[in-house]
Length: 536
Image 1 (spheres, rainbow, N blue to C red):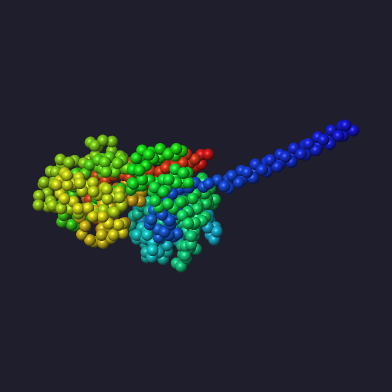
Image 2 (tube, rainbow, N blue to C red):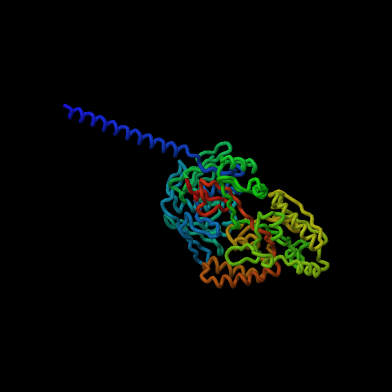
């Protein structure tokens, strides 16, 4: 009898413990599930809301940031300036770079609920044709060299994952394909001239736009997109005021923000130099330069001696250490092979030679102007640079310089509208690294806007050297680095005699990143959010 009671008691106890175990396990799973569901997304500040949900029509940086994270690109630019395949597996030049065979990876799918099919070559072809012909396309000029006589517009699908692009002349296609305006669309969308983009992304990138709320754009990981995102969700908070964003950062409302020129000074004033729980990342790799552009058709700066004197009169190291207060690091105009390298001492700067500047100025004789006009953007950083340049020239050469400021659109209209400016400061963002900077600064035939400063490219010696360099680097694939270095040395010799533009400095990018997360490769201009990794 007692044995029966003990057996029953044991059975009841065992069953009870089993159910308690099941209950505790269920509670733990529910708790973990709720924790995962309620975990706050990584939050980053952006300075303005999206202006266009159509990537090909976009020019503002804040919107391009979102497109870069929601659309797959065929190629992507790394922080080093190196161009690497992304959605594309390869791009092979044929016919000396006039024809390119592009192969894309399989298994990548679009993330929009209306379009979930696999990304195929026909989608890529339709996207590129649209970029070349759309009336509001910001990158149509990239494809001006396509063989327009072809029925397919120079873009031919040759396989499920393969297409061929044909151009009238050699072109460095992979570097063009890194532009965020060329995010790949479904062919149904790209071919529909009347398609209206709603508040959604229709790409196959690492994220999709999950919601557009007042002041917030919510990104959700695309499980079938490429590249693969590490974080499941990211919130982009639209905060226009830098000071407000900084206060939100301190209160842990946001995780990261970029600091502009004004914020850089405030952040380094002492009060904000250390924010508990956050790290400051400074990226020396550069992706934008300031140039002074001389209008060589204008009599005031037509004489080469005048331009050379103005060039050698600027101590860019002083600009960075005084006017810009370490927001920049000077980069040599005579670049080393690969990427420009910040100079280590004043003696290493081939551009600041005050005694030579004075001599050239005197030798210019009657060609010397008594007064100059320098145009600049009205943004604080640009105006600060322009004022510093004016003071340097007046101090060393005795020439009076009037600084005139314009908004972005007005100044570009002046520069590219044929108006008679003398000198202008111009912010130039290259497509990639050194060679693309040359493309934009010296204007080869295949890139607009025309007339920026074409006199150097009209020099037969420079034109031949540049063509040889492009062919050796892009078409032959830099098989012999010594050939590249030899050609670059010859190009540098030509540029030293009469440089058409003066890059003043390389900008530093500053980010504040919570210790909750780490950068896998480091932030770079427009952050690639899918590279963020959680550390907690």
